[in-house]
Length: 457
Ligand SMILES: Cc1cc2nc3c(=O)[nH]c(=O)nc-3n(C[C@H](O)[C@H](O)[C@H](O)COP(=O)(O)OP(=O)(O)OC[C@H]3O[C@@H](n4cnc5c(N)ncnc54)[C@H](O)[C@@H]3O)c2cc1C
Image (cartoon, rainbow, N blue to C red):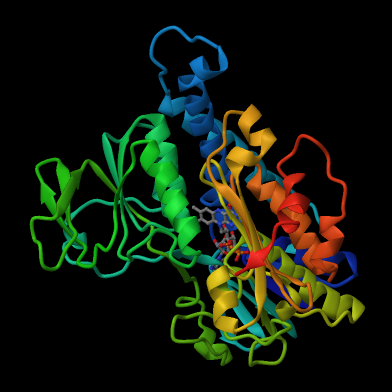
């Protein structure tokens, strides 16, 4: 049995910086990884998908070069093997830099293998037994594969196996019309596949406001993606080399046939094979580890960070979890999860940047609110770039002038949303942002203008 001050399980977005911080503070640290250093974001999530989105964007712009006065002779060909090689190079570089960073850290020992709790302070990794008074769980999650009729009869892909695709699927059926599914749908359409998105709900990304969902749908349909909503009875059958997906409970003829199926039906935490019961760590009904506002589990000395605690689901929320725990333990900062403001992006093109509450949530809260909107056709920067799809909107509290929420669905939306987000963090009234002088020509320059045209929500 080897004793440490701290054991970190998993090398996702929170584990490595936490291990490094504790080790640099003089603690004796062990960090355990069972598969790929860097976890989901680096290997099968954000980084490789955004690299592929960039290749898809290049194909898209090449195809419409004529609109900009740039002629490219002949059809645009996408070499999928090179798309994959580029993605592998970017993702691989990131993975090896996490690995070499951790292996080079003073006071930190890296264990490669599956970590299993034997008790609240004891972990087994292969033949090694480790013990520590502080254990940090950062085990992330994986694609959720629900039991759908016929699924066991067909081959299917998920976000991890998609990473090995170096060919062009003739017709990709994307089951799940939310964040992960839509990014893959648009990129493969731009690579040249036929694409159908199958969604159970009556609209795409149904946690967003209806105007956002509708505009995202318009953007995707304009590129030739077929969208099947209200598909309440999804079932699968093999048809020769192809796969047929039945969609409707009443109308059995409503079905779609394609060459490949990608399941993008949410994520589940990697907590079922960790021996949590031996440590007495509580999980909720979906398997997420229950934590308090400082990310402490019910067992003293054990914390859970990142996707496995169900409090985030993004790289930036996992990294923020690290900052909360490290700030608490090393500097007594008393930071809380509930202090952070919802923020994320959907990386279709143009992207959606989101901050704070949706308009639906604001209406349900009963607050008196004012809202401003602007189509991207009235944003000079978007028009100049020939990318004027989408819109931006912002909603504020009519009495306190606090910014409550915003969405920028348009070119640069993932970046421009930060001027709104940071004003919210600074707890400044919207009038501060309204009076700021922004740079021309940018997308963000229209945010103050939009704030001058507020109407009741
Ligand atoms: C397709 C896709 C695209 C995404 N795009 C974005 C995006 O653009 N922006 C964004 O913010 N988020 C994105 N995400 C989400 C983001 O990837 C995750 O939120 C983020 O990686 C969470 O990291 P984590 O720290 O919780 O753990 P993870 O990154 O999942 O890492 C957990 C690590 O723990 C290891 N592990 C698990 N169990 C054990 C065990 N028992 N013993 C030892 N090691 C173990 C795993 O092997 C893994 O390496 C995307 C996700 C997907 C699937």
